[in-house]
Length: 413
Image 1: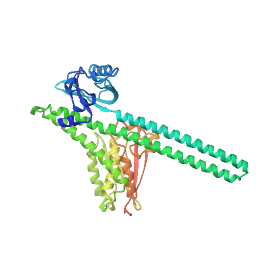
Image 2: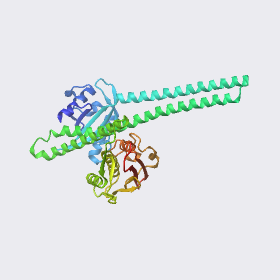
Image 3: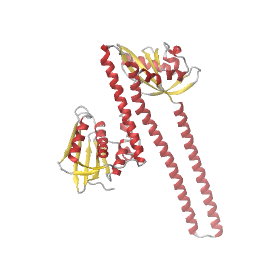
Image 4: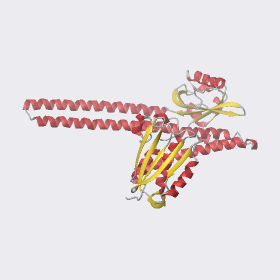
């Protein structure tokens, strides 16, 4: 675990309640330009310019005196001060550790220089694109004006005038679509960067913090604390693996590598297995109600793909519902189709966000503090398309959400 800390690409510090540095990794030494001996035992303010260093010290002491968290457990952007006096943008995440009744704080610092440069480049690119669009539109408008003048002089037909005007409108529409596409790509990049910054750094921070501390519990009587940190690391690694699985699934679906593996299987047995699997994910007091008539039919479809569809929808229902709430799965047959409804009593989806549901990396505005990649429903839509199925939903903020899906009993390519 020590090697993880030593080889981490982000700077990691461990400080006491007075802000004195008691541990630092090589990435932090390289980031700030100091030798390890230069910073150990020094106050963390050595690495911050005003007003960050004064605010940081007051935040820590205010938390210790009042228990009110301002920066603890919350990432924020700061400026770091290099040994040579130069400043650079960084993101700082601070978490608390209690060891032998002593309070310590871990700080993970990520250099944002490249990110800020990329953001500035994107802004400049958008401004340049907007300028080009305006200039091109002016050129086209001037060309049309000259054409109209010529037509008036030559007494051309009104049809030529209309044709020129229509051409201008088509060109303007094409330019508008190009600009919208560029802005859409910029928004997609922004969503991805926001998701990746949160969903990757949070489990990595947990892994690195636990790895830094686990070596302290090397005595038999500390086995409980040691195992607790090991379980934290396992949970974080599982979360990262799930994120990577979503990314790989999206990539394979988009590039056409997924082909349905069609088999005959019992729908009743499939639903029973799924119910058992999902019960392990329920929060305290939650109930999963599978409402179906024992239809006793086999369906001809991709079992794993159908399992992934329902797993995504049911896990979302569980995740976005509070304790002591019910999640229902209704299943019935209509002609040659199987209809399923997944209903929850959760937070619901804001009206203004509903049109974006299913877009890659999109998270509803009321779900930003809940873990997720914004890929699950995009994967569901892609899988349903491969199975000749459909999906729709209804939702009301504060009153829950119902997803309706249909798939054919017998798949036809």
